[in-house]
Every structure is written in C-alpha cells, then in structure tokens.
Length: 471
Image 1 (cartoon, rainbow, N blue to C red):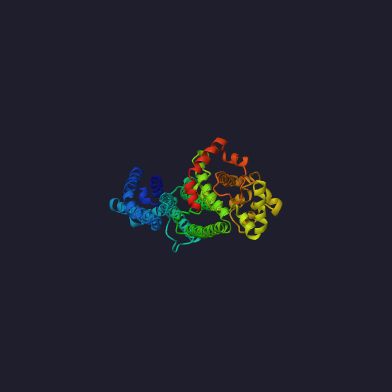
Image 2: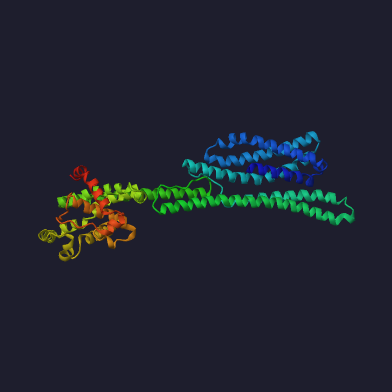
C-alpha cells in the first residue's frame, strides 16, 4: 500500500508540475499527459515486486536496507528516463524538457526512497524479532548528523531547482501577458510556487512521522530490554536492524547484558560451591545436623514441586524459585554449625538440657547462648551477602510472623519442610522435641490440616530416596 501511495502521489504531482515548468509539456492535451503518467507509474508499480524480491529481499539483514535505498532510487531514475525518451521519440521534445522531468523524479524519488526504506526497516525489525536474530556487529557507517546534513542539502537543492524552473518558465509567460491581466498572473505564479512548497512540506511531514515510528520502535525495544534485564532476566537482547549509532547502542547493550549474565552465573556458581561447602561442613562436624540439612533440602524441593501442582502456586514456584529454595535449604540451620564449631561445649550443654527437659533446642538457645541459632546464621549470611530470600529463610524459619511479606513464601516452604522432616524423623539436627508447624506457614501456603496430612504422607512415601540422598 505504501509504494502505491507514493507512486500515485508522484504521478499526480508530475501531471500538474510538468505543464508548469515546461512549455512543451504544457502544449500537450492534459488527458494525454495524465494517461502517460498513469501508464509509466502503473507499469513500474506492477514490475516492482519482482524487482524488489530479486534486489532487496534476497539480501541478508546487513545489506537489505542499503539495497532498498538503491532499488527504489533506480526505479525512479528509470521512470524519468522512460518519460524523457518517450516524449523525445513520440512528441519530438528537446532533451531540455526531459531534464526537467529528471529533476522532478529525482526530487520525488528522494522522498519516496527514504520513506520506503524506513518502512522496510520496520518490516525487517519484525522479521528479526520473530526469528530471534539481529544484524551482525556494525561496520563503518555515516553518522546521523552527516545524514541529516546531506538530506537537508538535497531537499533545499531540489526545491530551489524546481522553483527556479517554475520562475524561468513563468517569466517567459509573463512577457506575453497584457498589463490588465498582470495582477492575476502574479497570483498564478505565487500559486505555482506555493504548490511546490506544499509538495515538499507534505513529504517532509511524512518523513518525520515515518522516522518517529522507527525511533520510537528502537527506544521502546531498548527500554524494554533494559527494564527486563534490571528485573533479573538476562536472556533478553536488543534486536539490531540499523548500521548506525542506534545499532551500535543496541550491540553495546547486548554485550553489556551478556557480560553481566556471565558474571552473574560465575557468582551463582561461587554461591553454590559455598553453600555446598557449608552443608558438607555441617555434616562433618555433626552427622545428625548434617543429615537433617541435606534431608530438609530434598524435602524443600519435594514440597515446592508438590505445591506447584496446584494452580495457585504454579506461577509463584517457577523453576528458578524452586532451584533457589533447594540450594538455600541446607543453610537454614547453619547457625547450629557456628555454635557447634565455636561454642562446642556451651552448645552441647544446651542440647543436653533440651533433652533433659524434653523441649525444643530453640527454646533454650536464647536463654543459654544469648541468641537463637537462626539469628547467628542470619549474621553470617548477611556478612557473606547471600541473596535476600536465603537470608530471610535462615533468620525467620522458626519465626514466620516476623518475616517480610516479600520472602514469606520462601520462608514458609523451608519452615514446613523442616518441621515435616522432623515429624517423620528424617534427621533431628540435635532436637529430640519437634516444634509445631507455625500457623503463619499454613496461611502462607494456603494449606489446611487435611492437606498438610496428605502432603506429609506423600513426602513420607519418598523416604527411601531421601534417605539415600542424605547418605
């Protein structure tokens, strides 16, 4: 549709313009001149798709836009040549008459070519986005400032040339106008110049709107990618379609995200190694606590996957969240490892006293150690800059009511897995009394007592594989 409108506008403009600048064309019948324009531009429009497929669409993304510029420019030059030679052959017009048509076609073709190239850029962008591809790294290019300068010079030159041709023709015409008709003739000349100005203005407005669409497309894509990367998704990329400053910005943005992703993955690997080392330390220092940590880790994953089967949890418990829960689970009792490693005798007395009183160890830690193991683990996790969800799971897995709402889901899953693991005696972590399930966890997980019982039975069925994992 866009090429059709450009060709129609160019044919209509030439039908009016020709008689205004060339006395030879002005001598033709208007119907004959309009028919000639319609025939030439109509033929060009019919042949354009095949020519476009061969010279533009067959090119790679890096060459396609430059090919579009060349192809459309050639079409308008061929149109000018056909009109010129047809008039010379059929009407015996001089070459000078044809050169005026060439000037008009160059001017109209300049505007049409730029607009159609911008339209092709939008089509190319959609194709590359659909295929998940981008152009290759940017090579040498003409800066946008230089392109705008060249464009401004061409526009001014074409308009000035056309106006000059109109004035020259009208000066000859005015020489034969009677004095009493001179006032009306001046208005006619002014109208012709205004017509040229309006044609140029219409094309400039159209180009501005078309360029605005492309710039808006780029800035929206750039902002969307940066916003997505900021939120943590480092698999997004800017689709590069231009060999200019904007293309270079897109390439640098992609490289920045790729570098950030590589560093993030390296940090995650380091974090995973640290978590594994701490869990191994726990098992080495205290086999009972170590077994409980590893078994709880397996339970956390099993609990999260069971919960994900329910529609209300499917979106919240994605693979990344489940993986984070699984990796952080061994750290929930890391405070006990600190107590056992640095305050071994004192903590042994806490465990003995809890056994004597038949109470949960956590109830005596504050009284005899000065702080609960969850608080000790929290300070270590914060010092080592673990992810916020992991820090909260360590600190609040026995005190859910104090957990921030943003981490409640993670904390509740770790707490529930911890309690369920103790209830079916898969590792006690030094505790011989089992703390009850916090009502806040039941509310956060949306589980009633029957559902919790069913879940415990389902998890208990996996006891053998969990035991093997912890050995």
